[in-house]
Length: 512
Length: 112
Image 1: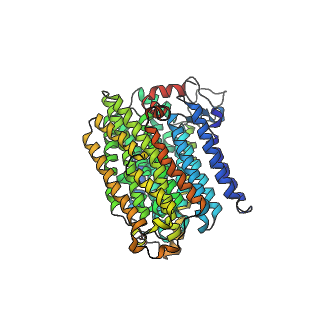
Image 2: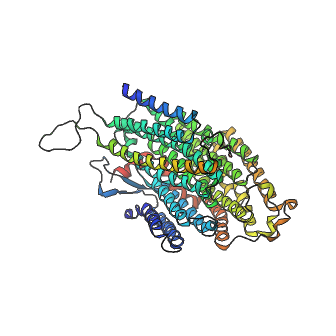
Image 3: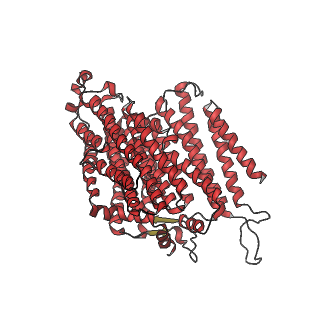
């Protein structure tokens, strides 16, 4: 099965290449190849997921395997955590691509759009799979450079400005990351994540260690848009074409931001109390401030973008609490619960935030506006958009029986068990504020009759768009099943094991 | 030691430029300056005083070689830097066509 691993990067890369070359010559070539390659990736991810279980496998590029316990070449590592991310990336990617088939017709240069879309997926798959730091950086740049181009795809004034801002801040973050990688290599003379862990276990210079950790938090925090580093996100995510907003908010900030932060702080560095405190407080701050900024927005997509910051805060806070509890060492059950809650919320957020951006795209497609004040009365004329967005809104604000309720509940229970009463209260309060601004969205977009005089002629969106929205809405309900202990065991436990038993993880990789 | 400090000074020069300049092209140039300071650090990490180029010759063993891996990393990073700079310039040119200026004080439709 390990021979399948490089396909996750190769398939989207090759299709991007073919689309650029042949897309202009053969009519609607890109419309067939891009969804097919994403579908193949999704099937592959699910196939590997069912066969993987609790083990982790790795693939040595070019056959350069280790030499006496020391890894030599480039490894791609697939374990419980990365396969979970792969499933989310390729699922949301496929759905957003199906949606684009109808949505993208209003732009020119369609084939470039599909090629860039394949590249962004290739980059994210590579980040999730790569087993050493420098390749992680290379794949990260592949995905973010294509996202710069996709944000500017509309080439209007706001799109270009947002893209420029995104590039300057993103470039700054990439440099901090590269500097941290250089410093780590300087000390440990290796780039393999597992090997660096072995090196740090043997002992380290404390001031150097903390400096590198802070650089990495700043760099990847900027990619994940945690609150002091969030300035680019509302502009970039609201200016991009809607399926791309769904990709950026739904998976890109998780795959290149949160995933890497978690991977590094669980599997590369030894847990430390101070860093865990920093992560937890950054998460709590972005949770609260993001939701407070979201409630004052009148631009629908900016509201959703700020809400992304707030929900990402939940995830970071849950993982921070997990590390804090593991450092204290007296309450491992609560730590596992916190980490499970963080993972679960990350999956859920990808689904419902993707769906909400697709809804916003449908409204924009028919009304040509993102201003909530100019909408109204759409519940009659766009029933599919209305129903699915209602489900997503209820899901994100934590109303049972939707998935968001269960993941937030798990995080709050973990916080109470671990005696973080303040954080538990904040999580409940933010959930109520979230309900507030999504009710605002529902009222102004779908009811508000006064503004809705001219909506009689508006029709429901075409089939590919409504199909992808319905699919994600069903998934919002289906993911509630993950709250059942037996289902959680099979799906989330391998990922949690990889994270909390770093020594075991490194043994299985190096021991080949 | 002085070389590392000079690299850091170069980094700060770039950062100063990114923060204070008002011209899109100058911001892009400052970003490149920062980028190259980090490339220099990367190259310095692999440097060993008196080391040879790492071409292993079985005839003369026990030579001191410089570390080749950071050099490979710098080459890759330069290519990535080229892509980001090209992208940044493309966007800057498009912005100039829309606004007829490179001044960021006049390109302010969005507020964070």
